[in-house]
Length: 429
Image (cartoon, rainbow, N blue to C red; front, side, top):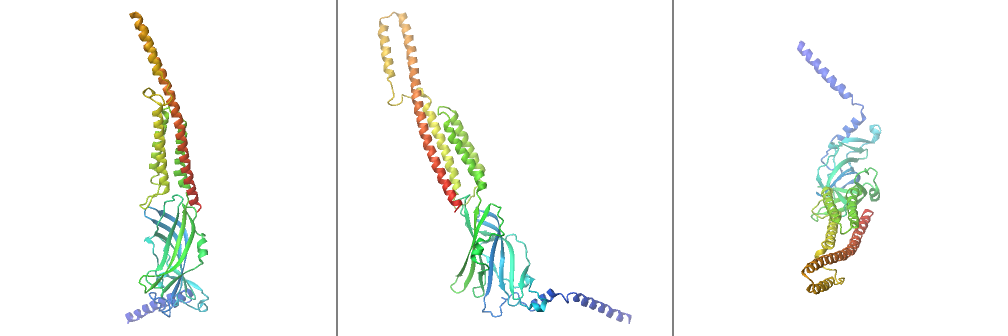
């Protein structure tokens, strides 16, 4: 008898506890509303009462940050707010606010409601994005899915104008499965508002956001079913200051020093060593900056061509210096400058001939003395002739050096002005 009495008491206590625990939520408005909305809700079914009605999904895009641009792999990594913004109407999530203490909107777990299968076509990798497990629902069924996401997308990057390049990368949103009869897309804001909005963009990195263009398009794959897509073109521009200071200015300084080297005398061996030192220094500079330049299989940036041309100019300058030095040295092996000779050889022959006539009428001792004098005279005349030849060729070397320097200077100025003009146009385009 005692056992029969004890068991019903325990059951009563357990039932009482369950009743008391349930009673805690008896007056919770949000709990009642959640139970009201979830009763009989099927999240796997498109939320329309008439299946012929199309679900209109409004999309908005706000770029928060440009994380990285991989020119080699043609990949753009952005951190964007996109709902991404998404909004659509769920006809099964509707209530009367007066029945629920004037509650006009509430958050619902995303896993419990129908969500359109809107994807980005250019996805190449799953980005690290914060998990937002809720959506907002208004009393008339408007569902807001505001979700920040890190997007890793493929993008055709044009690096020819590096570091003054402007990139245009697209983000194409579309339903992966539903046709236009089921899901259609539209912009949440006007295209002009979307284009100029930079309110959340972090503007301190390497890339500057110019604008975001949008375009709606309908397409068909089999000429039967049509699909809707919304394409956003994110236009960004690189800030060139870092590359100008670390790449262009050192190269310009070395080229200026190469011009200064022309003021060394052409008959001085120091000019050759100076030019060789500059060439070696520029080679080391190119090795250091090779990792900074973007490398792709599509093409070479113009700044790479600029460095190659600068190297070629340094080689031409060194070659010109070597030729000039070769021209003004070793004068004893060179003849007179054409049309500038003075007939020194004939004078020597006449002098030696005169001595030879005298030699026939003189004694042997005097003959030896005259022979020595004639040898000394011939040596002195030959030395004077060599000095004259050296002066003539040195003068020719100076003239050619000035001429080649002016040609080299004009070529370098034309090259610099052309590049500067092109980069200025691209920078402010």
